[in-house]
Image (tube, rainbow, N blue to C red; front, side, top):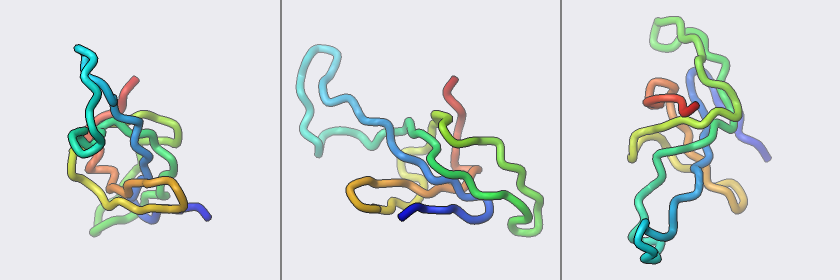
Length: 94
């Protein structure tokens, strides 16, 4: 089963968070912050959204930064994905 986003939506998969601090302290999963770095898994076609033409600027495989609490989390099998609007992506990591 795959997720195919519509309009200006983008499907992201979080990049694994650090489990230890710089000083070597191991963090419990409840103490870890939600990762802000994600990898683009799927991109919608763009088109007209709310009366405005939207061009998609991200592509599959790119690493991006999103807001901590943006998007909707979806669990598919053992994997968790986040679906966001392209406008919720703050930047592309190069």
